[in-house]
Image (cartoon, rainbow, N blue to C red):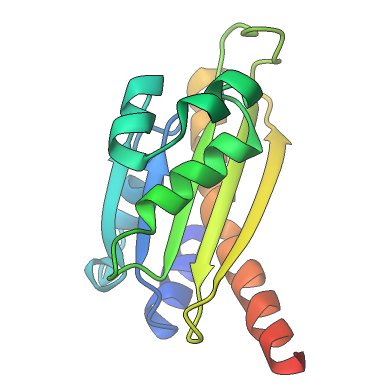
Length: 168
């Protein structure tokens, strides 16, 4: 069983329902899960929002955030994830935005992606994690690596949040 399959099984076993707000990966996160039988129980929706206008309209990203922080920022990815989490059926929203390549953009190196994972735990409190990662490769290699990375982080992030909750 590969890493994406293990993540899918983790989502199913823990009854985690997922929504994505994808810019650079353009739906690859949901697509990778969609190839695994049984994932219909955990994939709620995937939104692919490339343009600033789509991020604002569909996800509620603030124009001020984009202007102050840029499209490639953890703050923008967090607002994207929070927009996807508005759906009451969702327990986890993943978002990404960045520069897949082939060229650098606005001084940001190609391969730079900003991620956000927002978990809605049983206590109904949102737990937020953001991260910026650089991937090597051509545009499509970066996109696929980013989609896998977003998925493969889920089990460890979720376990750490659940463990924290038991300590509090």
